[in-house]
Image (tube, rainbow over all chains, first blue to last red; front, side):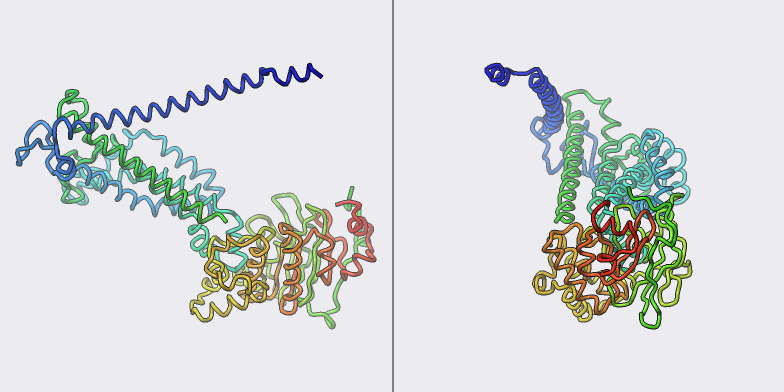
Length: 309
Length: 270
């Protein structure tokens, strides 16, 4: 009897191993949290320096339309107005999402509802392939094909928001499509059966039941695509023209937060106003991706509430 | 083990109605269902009398659900169904039939309650709206009538705008029945409608079905033999994709003609 008692009180090898495993996974988690925190801290400390060290008015930074951090603007202050880039980023994101969404939903419906076999065999590998193409390739095609096309069709130099929209449309299409397809696949089969058994046609079933039930998932897909569009740098930079002017038409050269960042970050001295201003742009990018993330989580939570009992 | 591969037709006992005394609502002739190359159902020849409850019983995998789902062509995109399904003198298994219109007359309720993630009201109004009915007054009337027929009006009349998913399992299933009868079908197919429910809800569903029998022809799949004996007028026994016996429920349970039926209802296999 005492032997059993002793063995019960002894720490076994199994429990030691378990403890070790727990510590290792916790350490990994802590490390990742630390990295994320440091990134935020670094970007924020640099980005905020513009306002605290260089004493730029935050409101002027957001609403100013002149960007040339080395010199002074017409009002005598350093010209660090980020509005053109902010507007450019948002326009290009919204337009590309607007163009991509109908195509993505149509493709997803075809893949999941109309021809699931061909969807799984052909369309899914193709969309996954599209995700894997490096963005510089998209940008190069945009530069060689889309820009001349826009120039010849709509006039102007061809560089601008319209070209950026076309390129981003192709870039985010696979993401939005495959996530929408996942959302549609997640709609329980019995919804379709219930609808069909009531005499609804296939189109009525898809439109009134399946798509409705998949709305949260598809919104998430769209926002995810927008986040990707917002953060894309290289391909956009190659076709948008990179003029830090408020865009007055879709075919005039413009710029985005990301394109100005990639253009300028190598050419400035650490700690100078030029450098700090770029960090401020990065901070806005980071905040925006945080907002996109929160929107996605919010939609996901609401969708869950709607579909649970 | 149950093995009827060697059974000849003489060892099967299939009831045929005399058309003079019985009105046939639905019948199948030489029905075969294939999943790819494997045969799910061979020789399902049954006649279903109007305004009666016919039960399909048999062990798991005997093909009774497959058979039922073929009747309103819910197997269309899943399996190949050969043979004739006669409804009002038409073979509804032919390509000329408007499947969606046909399903309006042959409704179905599934094993698992499957309300849409909409309100109780909208669940019932769904099919009506798809048929172009939009007048609030008409919709209200039909929603109430259907819920009354499904014996749940008094429980939910104040909560019509609540999500159907907030109902209990038994209520959800009765909502599904109400939804199916809202479009006034001729025939109601039920695929083990009570198998996911507790005994109280089950007996409520059974009462509802006995009530509905006055206006609907009901064909129900069940693996609960007591349920079949309680509510059905006729019972068909399926085994390994074949109908072995089809007779009045009383006869099946007290005096089966086929040995395997006897084995099954006395619990020797299944």
